[in-house]
Amino acid sequence: MPSIERTTCLVVGGGPAGMVLGLLMARAGVETTVLEKHADFLRDFRGDTVHSSTLTLLDELGLGERFAALPQRLIDRAQVQLDAGLVQVADLTRLPGAHPHIAMVPQWDFLDLVADAAQEEPTFTLRRNAEAVGLLYDGGRVSGVRYRDRKDGSEHEVRASLTVACDGRGSAVRAAAGLVPRSFGVPIDVWWFRLPRRESDPVGGVGRISTGQFAVMIDRGDYWQCAFLIGKGSDAAMRAAGLERFRERIAALLPWMADRLDALESLDEVKLLDVKLERLRTWHRDGLLLIGDAAHAMSPVGGVGINLAVADAVSAARLLAPALRSGGIVPRSLLRKVQRRRWWPTALIQFGQRLAHRAVLGERAATVSSPPEPPPTTGVAGLTGGGVPPAPLSALPFPLRLVQRVPALQGVPARLIAIGPLPEHAPDWARRGSQEVVGPDHGAPHVGDR
Image 1 (cartoon, rainbow, N blue to C red):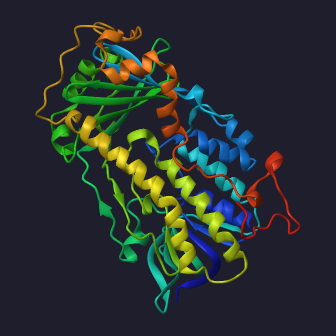
Image 2 (cartoon, rainbow, N blue to C red):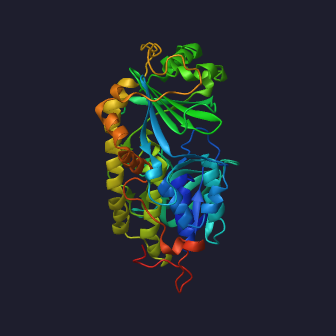
């Protein structure tokens, strides 16, 4: 017989949404258990961006100093490299607040930090190697999860007043609940890989756009985390063309990186991201809520998926913790309220991502039949790591000319990416340090707390 545990809030998935939700619920005094499928958080090529609004949240939670101690790279600008040269399109230094930048931090370090903070709370439990394999029901209501211990194969049950699925875009909980997301057609997949970075290279994030090809390089200090767009479903054919063909493509697209392509020794070092853009019509069942990628898988455009998932978690905690702490069953109306609040920023961002897919990225996704572009004849020609010159204004399309002539406009894309629509702030009862607001019941949440 499987062992049976009980908790108040059961969170499935120890990613950014799950760990932040677990921390906030525990700080509300809610007995909370997080099930994490893996033994640790070490996964390469996960999203490593911690955006300005999330950095502000960490300050509010009293975790800003701990986060600042992590190894990180701060990005305060976004640039696009055209055939004519380099153009700055977003200036994050124009953002309000204490964090006019995006922090690049290995996601495992971020998750370890949040997990450590959560485990300081007496009502928090993290179960690792715990893979959800089914839902439990009490009548028609979800009452918990059945999970398998991946170390010894034993099965267990956790019964809960509320189950929250934060287990990603391949959510096992979502499948078990019979929920099927609406899928928006995506014309691209992404190859992720790393290349060494030189001191003379551009600083910050760089997008490289050329006819039929597109790449994004994220400045990680001593290396570039690179994303190369390929046509949807073309991974196998692209790999069959071989490593040398891929090196030729990168050398043609990025001549200033041609001197370091030998560092890419095998296509095994190139990881595929199967890009999806999906959204559930309904994010809840009686006793069950889905947030983050489990509710809405995001495209990598803008790197906003983590920021959005964390905002979902904060909103869910603020709205649901008072009901859970009182010991009652969370009514379906409160779950609907979470979805209503988080649906419109999600839909807005996904609409922008769909436009980017159609207008910019789709026609620039490489396929095995598309030949590498010849090196450009102006601007970056012949550069081998010695820097990329700025593009002359006369060579730019009107929108890019405008943001060069009126630099304040570079604050608009910066705000959309680094803060986003409807940023969420920590409830008063979850704050610590200089931000702490403690009421007569030791910081317990009350209906109406923001």
